[in-house]
Length: 262
Image: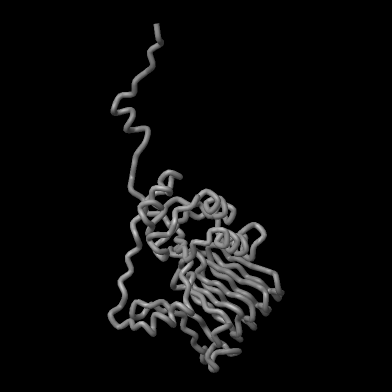
């Protein structure tokens, strides 16, 4: 005779758990190529254990966005790509903007089917403006997680050195030389020369800013929108006391460089 097991009543079952809706911060990766091996190589070179920024992500939830690829892109095995993303401290949880075949492949691997991102272009946008934006701006992270706290660095940062102020601002009292990298979830203040890379609002805080007494960086980025030294700075801010901030006027995201007046 089989043993009987206790059956929970509806009242006891409902008290053991509660289901609520939740809004969680996510990272969105817009895929631009169907050369999957090259994509994995580029990801590891940038964010892998031996890459340029191995600690940039901290097991962040990721949405794979395929909306930039043609609808007839052949379906390939997603497992190697997902493995590479996990090596970069990213946790793939969803897929969007893909064909039905890609969506089915994602669901079979446990990925949630997310709705496409809705972006409404400003009526004053022109094809020329959009072309310039593509050259100078890249959206990497789509979320906003500001936080308190300040990290202070009082020694020069040399090539190969990296400082990350997770959850707060970063204050550097010495030069940031070429090849060095300063990252903060909040603002970055460099009370000296900034010649290396500076990334403020690293986790999506679009209100973050970068300040330097002498601005001549290899790269600056705010909330994933960045500009490299390949695009020269205006003469009135290069090598001068200046700030960098993110503007969204007219529906366009662009970095503004402004001299600081004494």
